[in-house]
Length: 278
Image 1 (tube, one colour):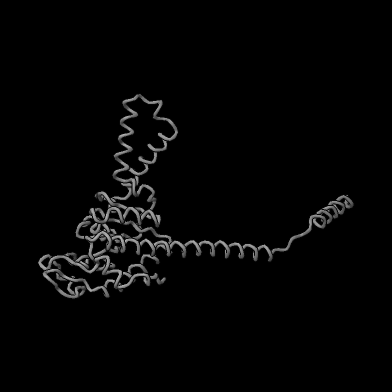
Image 2: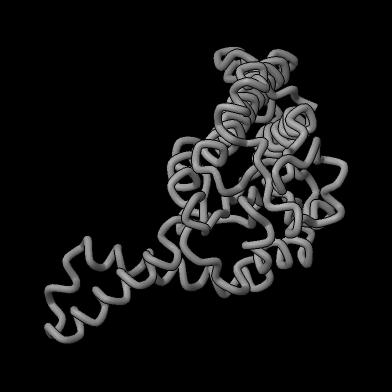
């Protein structure tokens, strides 16, 4: 397993970002008890030592997935997460959903891909000037289709293969995404606040999912883990190419080549011998 670095994050940094603040005690989920440090003024305080440990575990997992060529789908549609999901997913070159989860995105992936292909086709037609040859009403209709499809799918239209894992901000908000991932066997990494059920995700990260700074910090660390995985993947690809080249050279070296002149001389001798017999 690759070790992702979380050394840059300290308890102090987590405190400054408000990661430790949970929800009101009355809204807690009992299965979050092991991640709660204390209750103060009716608010649950998250154990940040647990946060650090589980964040590192999640980052290691993400790095491993990407190092093997997999993609991580970033998901966070709540207002506090939208900007961070957008910025960090783009920074590490991963697909994301920050507006609305489309039902069937994982459980009916082929249909979603067909819609993405249609969007890409329409954009290609527009770029090539095909729309200018159409009746004005038809061109306007297709323009609206492009705008609508981009609102729905623009953030993940370059996702050409099934995601290897999901990173989710607030699984209680993204219930459909979590349910679909579990149904099709896609592992999930998620920021879980004190009102969430951590058992619903594979790699829970106990943290405040309402503090913008805290969400941004968590998203940035997952993005960093993705980038680490990409570096490893690229090096392994280069290594495979070099190894393949060396094997080809060794194979060529084991072959015995007959010089062209020697080959011609041998064949001419055979011809002469045949003629002499006649």
